[in-house]
Length: 92
Image (tube, rainbow, N blue to C red; front, top):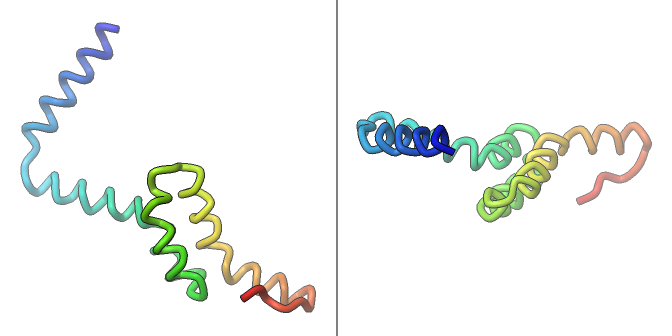
């Protein structure tokens, strides 16, 4: 337990001494990871990119929902290709 307290103390001290550039970089990295499903949807699943980006905001609080959005974001064109291969109509 003492090791955990030392870690928390060291982390708090390092966080308080962080400069503005580090905090800005960390904030941008955090937002990029939070909105990763939305960014990937722009590249892979443009048809549902708006829905994925909107649902991404609350989904960031739940890893399960965030991972589900991540899967949905990268499988858009793949599902259309599979539907075309099976001669089915793509889901709108």
